[in-house]
Image (cartoon, rainbow, N blue to C red; front, side, top):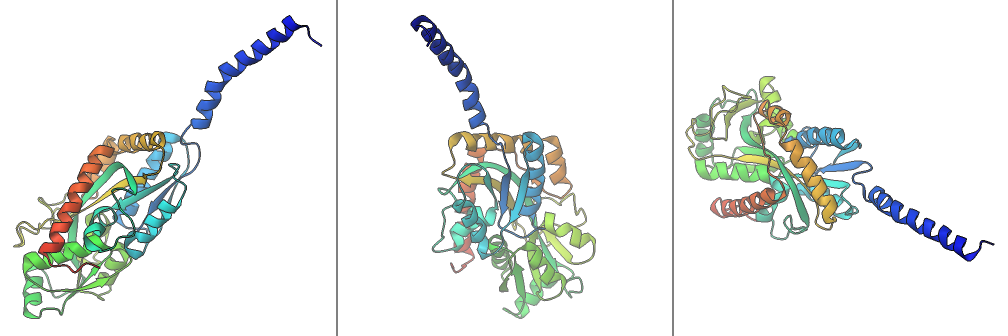
Length: 327
């Protein structure tokens, strides 16, 4: 047995080592992220939201050295994807990549929404904004917006439109209101399915974001009549704006942003927000979206919070103005 002086020395040394090691062990335990991050998209592959998730996922993996997977959970107006994220552990490893539909429009469109996008989620950053494109089948008799409006006015309720989400539905209803026409809603699970319906001639028209539409337009699979933006899109420079086609003031954009469960610890939320905002501000991110006719949105969490609140109020007004019946 050690004598008392030696026992005290050993104990002191042990305590000293523990004191030195504790911060390092704590740092290791708190390191984030340290494993696979999942980005949940409430729409099918091929949608503008999916495209953004895959781009940001790749960049996030490069920054963190951790695998990032994109999981598509389409259907139910985005509810399936939302519920998947909110049911997962709130540890920062499950991120919701949502659009104007799930994060703003649904508030205006549904009487009883099974989630609150402002209180159930914590914003991380905006990713992008892209104008909508009005598209018809390639063999459609309508060559211009004027042709389409004239036909819709001649036979109210005959023409129908496909929507891949609540957001696209409201864009179409706003079009109905601005153009003074009545077209019938045909819901689809996502933008790619809605575009496929138009390409096949199953439906008469659709509104879809330019990132998901331009390839089909350039390939002759669908015919684009107008872009719903202030200026012509660089990705489709020959496509006129809605204003040029006789609908001044008609503008409609989709946007994509990232969020986590509001129950996620502050440290993990802030780390994710910092990483994703860093990606949003990269020159290559701006170039990536410009090639698609879209615009990179570089604001962080607080800017996204303000932007989302303004969007919710905007869509509420549009629902009333366009007399859209809440679901």
